Amino acid sequence: MTAMIDIADARKTFTMHLQGGIELPVVSGVTFQVNPGECVVLSGPSGAGKSSILKMIFGNYRCDSGRIGIRHRGALIDLASAEPRQVLNVRRSTIGYVSQFLRAVPRVATIDVVAEPLIANGMARADAQARAGELLHRLNIPERLWRLPPATFSGGEQQRVNIARGFISDLPILLLDEPTASLDAANRAVVVELVAEKKRQGVAMVAIVHDDEIRHLIADRIVDVTSFAAAA
Amino acid sequence: MVDQAALENDQPLLVATSLSKSFGRIAACRDVSFSLYPGEVLAIVGESGSGKSTLLQLLSGQLAASGGHVSYRMRDGVARDLATLGEAERRFLFRTDWGFVHQDPAQGLRMAVSAGANVGERLMAVGWNHYGRIRDTASDWLTRVEIDVARIDDAPRTYSGGMRQRLQIARNLVTEPRLVFMDEPTGGLDVSVQARLLDLLRSLVAELHLAVIIVTHDLAVARLLSHRVMVMKGGRVIETGLTDQVLDDPREPYTQLLVSSILPP
Image (tube, rainbow over all chains, first blue to last red):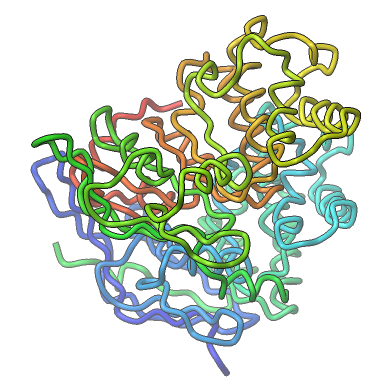
């Protein structure tokens, strides 16, 4: 099977120039693959570098060395050395990222926040909004809130809007950073269901999940991040 | 998906090669090179005196470079060196294919003539001569920038700062330019007015597939609007990359200082 994500010997260190140039090693020797339809969960204690690895796969953090191979429209692209324009193209049509928090733009209605990734990829506004409505409905966001900007919503509601926005696209790779962190049991179950649907569609996923029960339900494989601990 | 592929293979709109500018012994801008593609928003950030406004003037052909050159792909697809354009050609470019949003709207508007005339003037410059159509288009643009059409006959000197800035944007965009230069477009506005303007700019830029070069010292503006950033210090570009990369994982000491100086929201 051809891997969607193929990371080889990736390394990340922060150099803190304002603190006298301290070197803060984050991870090194990161090597794993993710196949289509597979959900890999990163495990390890806080500070082990799970989020950093997710950000490296998204091209948000730069790597010092190694390769972040991403299958983008049939060809393997190394995000660690890609041009900014290529990274943006990969994000537009290959990798989605569901962050822990919604970065809300003031004044944009919830339904449009969720529909935006589809519209950006050329879908008609009405169709995109219909899909957004279905997802918001499944995630138990009442219809009377759809026209409001999510900035004033509760933490859990914002998280669900964020999940709807992250899951709406048909991208072949999804990165999930604690998608169930502030959700109640009913909504956690919806997220588990959404992940299962993505797997059936052949989407490759990498997730960080602290909840043992959820991890057990969605993980096909666990990658222990402590094995990538950088030598200090 | 077809236009997506075309988007990836397209040609740069503007290419700067080893641009330099000295004022006497002072090097305001040293060896700057980059390419800008259609629909791409590039933010130039740095403190006052870092050379970012000089760079903007070099790129828009308002200032002659001491070294290097800027080439721009005209609407006919041919890339031309800005230094070889005649004055008339350069002015035509400014009236049609380019926009320039100044920090101070009084620099980009005619303060004593009506809002409608401010917008209509640019249309007349490209050959529109039907009064009714010009007025309709001007009204349409006032609505798009959220100015009450009832104010169309008022001069911008009767407008608030935020309205003036939105009018300046309408005046620039009415000819459907492909490239817009912006010099601190939200500077001098109070915070709530800034947020509204940024939100408006963000949606217009995406909708019209505009390429933008925006000079700002406000990293929050860069994060909200731009795809890429160039960090300038002492006339040089010291760090460049995807906006979220540079702001979330800054490498250079000076960029780390800039990023760490942002107050948490």
